Length: 144
Image (cartoon, rainbow, N blue to C red; front, top):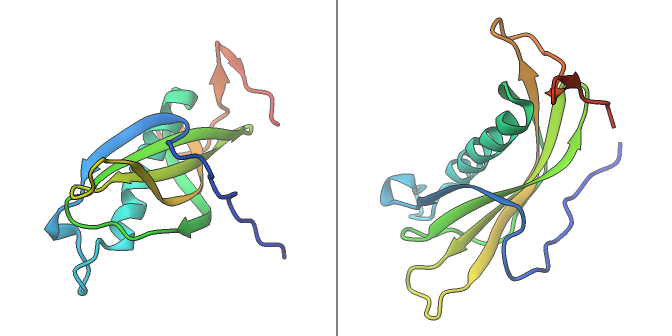
């Protein structure tokens, strides 16, 4: 079994489409007062789902999360932005590389900081919840 790790983004600015932006609040903290990793993962999944549904032009569900890298902490008051890049479109699935970036409330000048990234895979589903072929411009997408 080989491990897959997302490559480190050495850029100083987010890459890809902005999918969501939200403020980290006190209710999102763990017992130590830090933003809970599960909350951040959830924000990324929401953003990735929005991106995948836009591409698939259908409802999508999360089927896998790989290569998650929690690089830096997120704090109360941070502005969290999730950006998406298409990695692959398969017959019924879409893999998306997601990056979570923050602007620290207390930092001046403000600079974007990459805090988390990973690959999320979504499957296009029909009204009954069954996988369906992803259509592009009226024709099925050719699997890559």
